[in-house]
Image 1 (cartoon, rainbow, N blue to C red):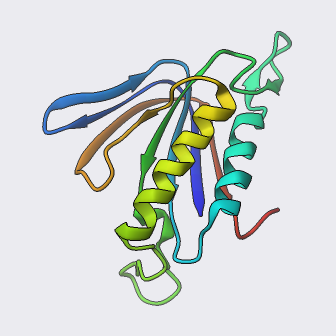
Image 2: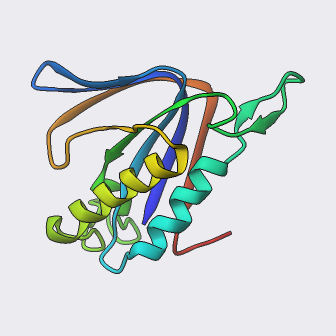
Length: 150
């Protein structure tokens, strides 16, 4: 399982020209689910996400997490995060889990983040053609792979 985290001043998801969800200051999280991902991957990444200290304190040092700044979270499924690009120029998505596996894990990840935060998490719509808009703050963008715990 992979997440791409972007610290944002605002982010939104539009589907069929209709606003689906919007957040203010917080984190936009793009989530890719792999074939062998489990609840353990969810627990690791959700915990890491809510404890990640990437917001500035009063001294301008990234020392605060999402809860400490009262930020919002928007989670969007994105199978292309599982792309393999080693061979050729056309990405392969063979490592991405099929919908029967990835949809429940995406929903469980979003629910676990909400549980850890103690408040609702905004989401995209699984499998939809979405337009995601954001204003990256910093910019701060962080990639975490649950299979490569560095």
